[in-house]
Length: 44
Image: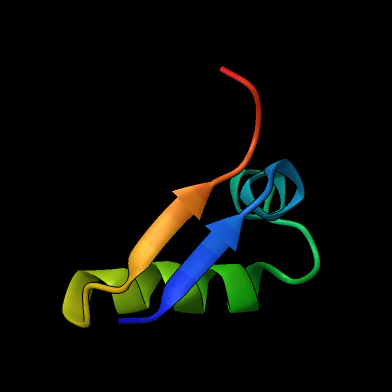
């Protein structure tokens, strides 16, 4: 199983529709069909 780690920068790129959104969106869409693991980095 593939794993992806999204940091804050990647998530903000997606949320704020910034340059690079295509890459982030593509990986997010893969999770709907292939079900790779997505990990989020950061402090809780």
